Image (cartoon, rainbow, N blue to C red; front, side, top):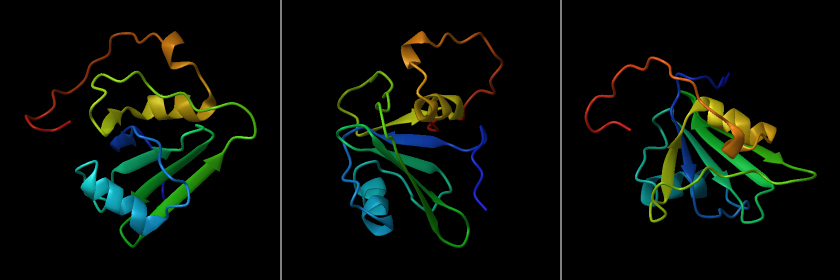
Length: 123
């Protein structure tokens, strides 16, 4: 059983993804373009060019899980790019929820909260 929470790491593939891709092709994108390990348990997020389809790929100990959502109306909003040249960016769990629920990311204001410092080299 897959559950998504703030304890997982989420990575968005920034270029438009071909929604015909399945488990193997998307895990290949994770390795080659995102520099990630698809078996890590991290959640990898892919959105198509029209931004009305989203796929989430995650390994859950015994195999890959692929969730696919298609919007009947509207589009998914992408977060602003800090570095437009990077193929992927890290998302927080609440950002993913906002994207899935259609909340305008530009309208979200974050209050200060405590966070454990990240070890060097981890993003």
